[in-house]
Amino acid sequence: MKRHHINLTEDRSRGMAGLSADGTPAVFSDAVRVDLADCSLLFISGKTPIDAEHRLVGKTMAEQTDQVLKNIKQVLEHENATMDDIVRVRVFTTKIDAKSLHDIHEVRSRYFTKGKYPASTLVQIVSLVRGGGLIEIEADAVIAK
Image 1 (cartoon, rainbow, N blue to C red):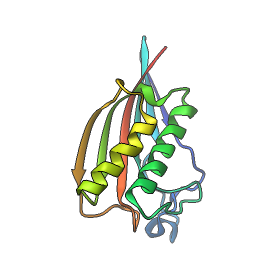
Image 2 (cartoon, rainbow, N blue to C red; image 1 turned 90 degrees about the vertical axis):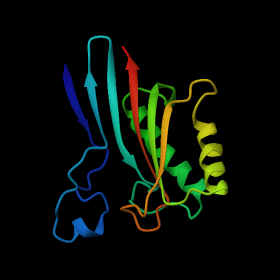
Image 3 (cartoon, helix red, strand yellow; image 1 turned 45 degrees about the vertical axis):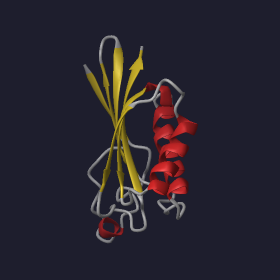
């Protein structure tokens, strides 16, 4: 078994103001890949709706969900995987109302192939580490060799 820690940013603080002031690093990887004999397991850290410069993208649930899934897709592509390789997602949102649920699932339907949806958990939380953030998603993937 081999383990690889995947980091797609040079910014050690990952744009978090509370860390960048004194140079404290954010102590997590974008993902961890575990290579097994027949496949690789990819554990993607929670992705928030930020762009490459660590700026919040979008004000609506739909806009932010789209950015989060773009960020997840970027990690997958880096590891030669696709959204179809995702087997489980955990969704954390600050709003669970009819419109928010609709927007989250409508955007997800553009990223996941019908009939190949991952197992999923969705929970409401008080807030995210990113001010103004409405949603965070973490994902696990199984990548065939």
